Image 1: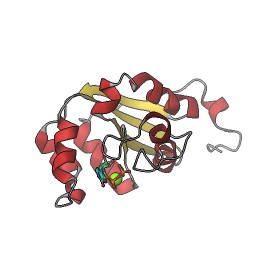
Image 2: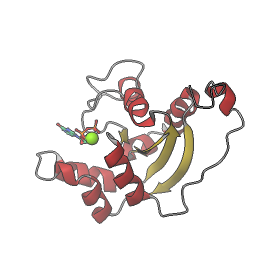
Image 3: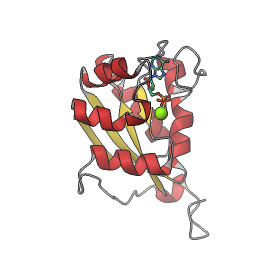
Image 4: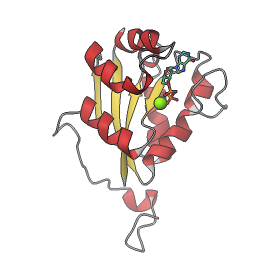
Length: 156
Ligand code: IDP
Ligand code: MG
């Protein structure tokens, strides 16, 4: 099982798309184990986007991400990191395929609605940055046996 960090960015919140985007993850069968509305402090945004420091879009990205509230999600499932990235679509709204979140809801390359961790290492780091210990809730999902085939003792 993997848990990945998803951020519904300020444009998603301002445009009233939180419910529709969250629905994509729920419909897919991923399980929400953490969720909160928050305005990201500058220092947190700097840590989160440290790998992009120095790039031409970095300052604008930090201004955007701290300008207005976001919804931060922790989402769990087998292979959740790659599944979430596929649901999100390509980075630029102008290029993302129809059927993906970025492809269906946006045209901008900067305001692209959503962040998702891109590796297990990034997920661990980003989850710790946005959720305090105890804010993630491990809850048994009663429909688990219909989301996955559990007959072999693992989630197939
Ligand atoms: P990702 O969000 O798909 O992983 P990254 O390359 O990690 O894409 O870039 C992080 C974020 O920085 C993007 O989601 C987008 O908001 C912004 N960004 C990336 N490249 C550009 C650009 O060329 N112009 C404007 N914003 C960009
Ligand atoms: Mg990235």
